[in-house]
Image 1 (cartoon, helix red, strand yellow):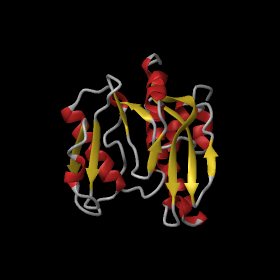
Image 2 (cartoon, helix red, strand yellow):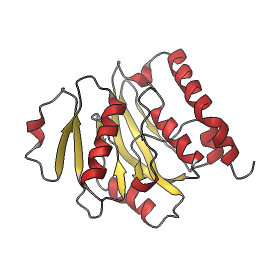
Image 3 (cartoon, helix red, strand yellow):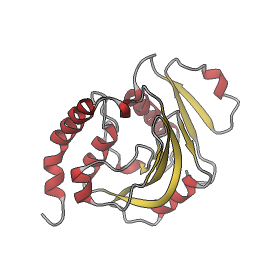
Image 4 (cartoon, one colour):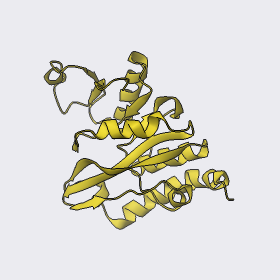
Length: 205
């Protein structure tokens, strides 16, 4: 995102034809095996991006997300002049479909992140700050929470950019709508993996 025109990497897992994207300007297409899953697809997209471009920022976007005009610009401004420990910027978003609400993320707080995930996957990240792998492929849910905690472990924080950045569609099959027990299992697993060191990183501890 060195200019107003960003390079877009589309990762196909067999659900769409690669050819349908090739006529778009600044869109680059790569693919993974059918059924590879979201985390492997995101990792492949990131690998392709870092091998082919030198953009200082990267943003992962799900297929069912519609971005608001100017959202990228606002998120980028939140990072461009930020201290180097600010690894990502994030905003609010609107949920539609099976869920109907506006999620107000609010200001970043390491202590708040310690207790819960309030930051969307659709955040703008500094490429140089990202761990390897970016997305843990053995985690079925809360992969974004996993990333934020791992970044916190490394001494990185986020910056809140107020305003609705995008709209996300939720249908009856969305993982976010799976039973409470399923949600709590994965949230507890992720917190168990990364929370101990994150607690040690908190400045007031």
